[in-house]
Length: 83
Image (cartoon, rainbow, N blue to C red; front, side, top):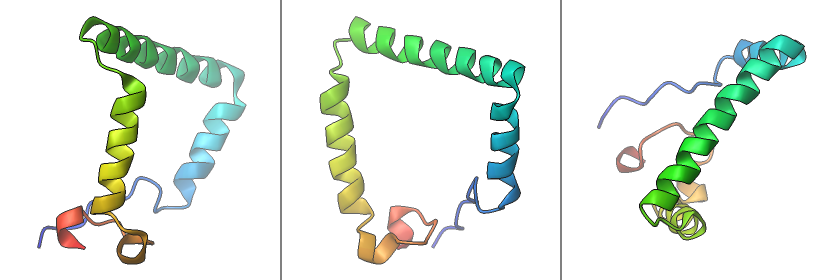
């Protein structure tokens, strides 16, 4: 079995840090700008290579549901092979 990956939000201080960043208008704008850049790249990439994002997301959600059944994975931060 592999080592469990560290959860980004296991430490309660991290969501508070995110809240603080988002409460500051300049920080929030910088985060929004970065997210917009990522979204633009994602949409353009999908368009350029004829990837239907609705279909891709639905397929990935189905795959995740199979890999991470709720009864086995709730409250755990393990890779599907380690459940």
